[in-house]
Image (cartoon, rainbow, N blue to C red):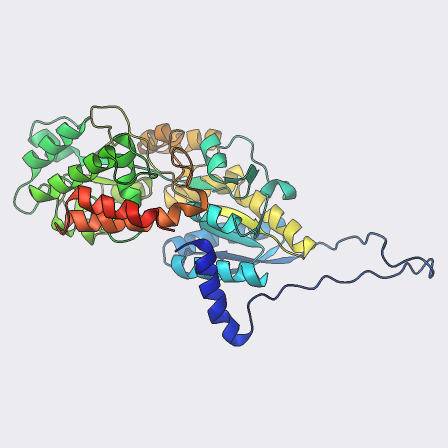
Length: 427
């Protein structure tokens, strides 16, 4: 749904209780007591008292992420002396709440959202540039800064980012006399050779959510396609690759229902020889003592395909309370500090957003190496080459719908993606 239509719908519902369209009334100026005849239009500047409490919204509403993020918030509350009143809201509910809050001018002091949602929220005018509050951007991955930039200003930065790779079971590959794949043809051949009773050669996640589009994007980009033309020959080639894996039995038909967590469970249980998944699974795999290796998701003929950058960005909404906004800046700086960045990366198995800290993460866990090496080439889902900006959601949903239709056999990849492109470009 387009942003203006989506906001209008939310506002229409809110209008039933008279909520939408209201704005905060600024405190009027007063005449100077030192000169009663002075015009009230030029009041003397009043020092802003330091705020001691701020509000924060995020969508880490389920454990372990809910508790892990609370740990980081508590540490920054102690460091800054600022109380952080948190609300954890499921992702879809959060975006609707934020869009409505932007209309009502009732947003928290710190807002943490999924990075592809940033452009949509910034487009409403609800966010303030982070540099207005002294947020330190030094040493961060440039593509991370770019992904948090809208119309030349940085509105959001993630303390940690994530990406995907191919993880393979070393024992299964050794037993079959196979080497890790480096091309699409090798993936197909290895997956077929490793598929047997109770074991699929390849596992990936393709549900009817953003997760399905996210998992498909490395294959789309690796084939040379982009999100501005979903029915291109390159996009069809990428979707056909997934379809063929399911059609010949090398991947389960259940991929259309599996989340990334389900895929990792299959891999850990020895029911998949390879999986496409993210860095956040490393802790679970290491604790389970799975003998696994990691290789990049390849382009069709070799070389690493660019993947989408994942991670939740910290933003500071526009607020009439200057003291609270200044306090929010201090908290965001703490959350982006080397110490908290490394702790979040350790708790969540994320790549620290500052390159020197990412190097520390690799020193602590060599399995982070392939993900850190790929981080600088990751792409924003809203940025180049398609430059969708706030329009990403209008493309993502038709894409995951097309993936579902093709994988279930309801449509050919060409027909499914043709329909997706029509939907994505509809007025």
